[in-house]
Image 1 (cartoon, chains in turn orange, purple):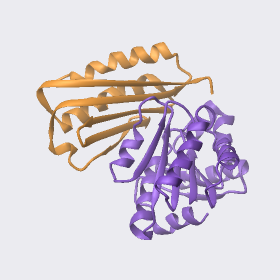
Image 2 (spheres, rainbow over the protein chains, first blue to last red):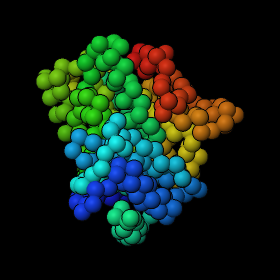
Image 3 (cartoon, rainbow over the protein chains, first blue to last red):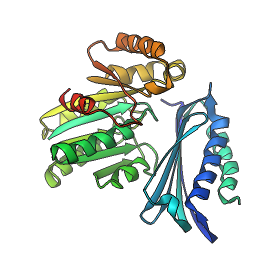
Image 4 (cartoon, rainbow over the protein chains, first blue to last red):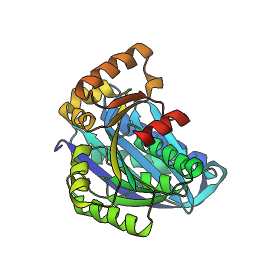
Length: 116
Length: 197
């Protein structure tokens, strides 16, 4: 069990220009795919990579356990709205990698979230 | 109060199964459900998905109830029994938990339940890699089960699922074994199987 570790990070974003639910979903997908490319074993994640975006009563949850498929759950209205303020939570549990390296991958990937 | 303990590796489909089962109990059986959602990360993610469906969810975060925050689990079970009085309590353990350790804790410190059954979800798609890398750990989860649900069978071919079933059986031949695809609607028959055990 010592070879597993957990990274939980919470980010708050305010956008000058509202982002659509679809745009946010696309950007989170890019983050998860980038992390998955670095952290897979034979295309599988030995652990999980999860993200949830919260905006008031709306939510979007994405998870990756097997490359390249991302599982998505959301409330019924997520894709109908634009958002100016969201909270993003990312949770990575992974086996067999260096924790500092995974932190570095996460930091690198977060640039994708605000990409146009 | 009947307790269903769900175990199984990270990402095996526990939350997806629990969501359908809980909604089935509420909508079709008209009984009350409470859920304890344990996540090893400091921030809960799955609890928000379950709570968004109107379910009564108590989150236990930043530790595993099988080995780190056992007291929090006992306290949560007793509190829910006293305040919510559910007919069913579903406990979702973290994907890093060994369910048999949770059973030991509940049997020792909680005396407010009628039955306690353990359902362990196995990820058919990743089984080979998880077994190769974690070895005894995923096996210890399987050995804890009263019932085993081999999930994501839509992602492996039928011959592979039969081989997997035989392999899993070797680790726990006392448990009932079922093949599922939780991402789709689970059949009422499967729901009943989970509730009857």
